[in-house]
Image (cartoon, rainbow, N blue to C red):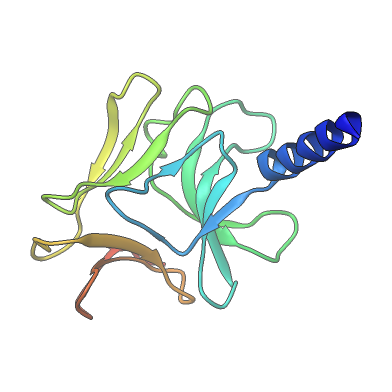
Length: 150
């Protein structure tokens, strides 16, 4: 009986750790982490955003691609000029300024972008829309500012 219990726990842990995590938005307390199979998926499942590496490259980029098209068709890249060198990057939104940031494994900022015409002071979130646009929203209001537009 003890062996069956251990096997059941092992199976559940294996399932849990191998599943990817899909989010519909990034918040200051819930960034998107490379190496954890985390991605953003638009509500209708049209677009996906996250970390990726092109074929035959070890460099890591943050981008947006069509979710259901094979091969992966990337339509926007955030850090084209400053790719990451490993799978330990973090995509986050700053809680005070609403700035989109990409950090490398040492916490060094490789990209800081804010295309918003004004700052969203409280509770900013970053959401991927079915249009492919990545927008910054106020968590409680319906204001939005485009951070990445196709």
